Length: 506
Ligand SMILES: [Zn+2]
Image 1 (tube, rainbow, N blue to C red):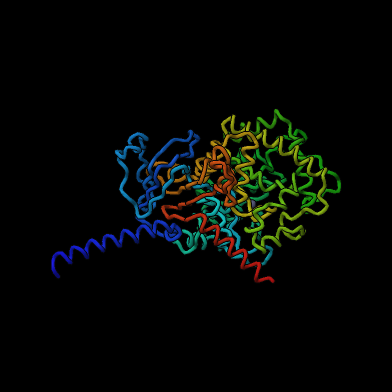
Image 2: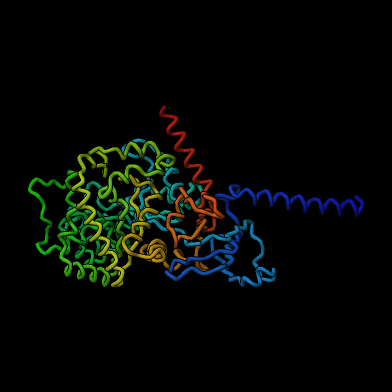
């Protein structure tokens, strides 16, 4: 071939690959879920997760699964095109006007592939998490299936955040002696669980199982319930985190037990949730502060899951979530219908009086939460979704808003969901921050979550730009260990999944 022909051919090939790369860049969905060697996020405002104020602009370089560089940009040098910018990546994300945060961590999640015995694709659950900017979940009711999903998520077989599996201690046959309690802990460890989820338990058995858990290096998340044990036991035995809130006001009741009516039956969920709405008002405030200080001293975190009780204070709001129209899977929809045989579906004869008590309950609870942090406590963010009108992921975003309502700034709320949750998992040196050397678990957000946490929602927000109402917001990219998921694409896949499941029922 003559030289000039070869030359023309070479130029043509370069031109072609340039066009191909342009087309590929223009179609971000084509990168979704792919292993890439190098991603560059350009011109981003960063909220790093530590509670530090937002700062930017920065270029962020991701190499494989790690944040490799965070390069500050001098706006003058950028506008005169003299700034030293990192070399192009396999994917370049223009984050102009966008905020980059650590991926959100859901510290109280349930991975579900069924509700009420009816099958539901596990991808519904895991994609909902990604669509809401969640890059890590702690499954606090993990069974053998969760261990498989954890492996599939890690290998890329399942489109999902990283999963940590906390195995349930109180499975049948429930340990009845101290030795059985210790054996259960050893069995969970041997089966490969990352930690333990503990429900209600008697004191002597808790002492034994917690002692064994410490020996085995297993962290424990405790849903206390109304039991012999309360938060004082979590303080004495060194629980990692108290889930929800039960056990904390209980530990501050001077008579040592809530004043229940004689007909109260704990196993009747309407009874249980109705009277739970009277619990915080019975806590002695001085005693409560001692409980909170005790938890702080013993390094016990508190994951309040404010969102999962919201239906108790405002049933109509919970039942008429606009996101249900496109995102509620029919199997989950069935499960949410009031039905005494489904856990958390207890709204039969729920009254305005119940709601008024619950509103007061929330006020006292939220005050206790802000006191807990003021005094040095670690608050986490989890949603307990899959129950009581809360959808996976959406529940977590609602939790962020409720923590803001409690009195925390969005900066601190984001810290709760990132740095604090990473610490509760024992992973504060590798996830939960935008920092060089950390795992590349990041979200790129269309807007400023410090101004409006609702920008994180797949529902987006309406805003006025140049005098016109436009629809914006939402997470644009959810990056899990360097694997970019184009969030609007994932959200569209969920809407399709829901539409198909509904169609199949017609
Ligand atoms: Zn739960």
